[in-house]
Length: 90
Image 1 (cartoon, helix red, strand yellow):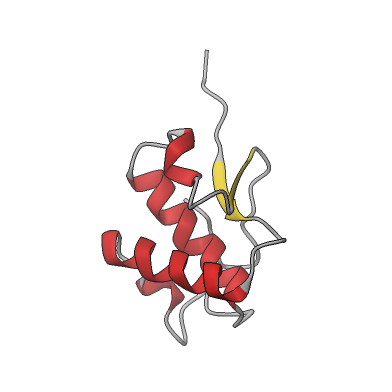
Image 2: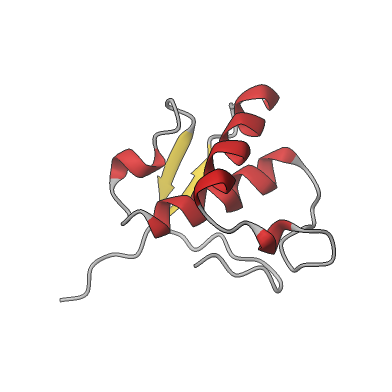
């Protein structure tokens, strides 16, 4: 039986400072080049979007354990694929 695929996104209630800290932390651990200007996940260019992508990259790379999406209680594990347009969430 296939295990349910999950993704990690930023909680909508997270403040800007938390989102920025999450981006900085996740991107110090995993490759966040997909967020660079001109890349598929750059737009929309806001902290919520960028944090969700960075947090998910970290979550997937570290083994998809629930603690890999904690980010001081600002992460949310979802079962609906958050990919959009050409921005594919791994």
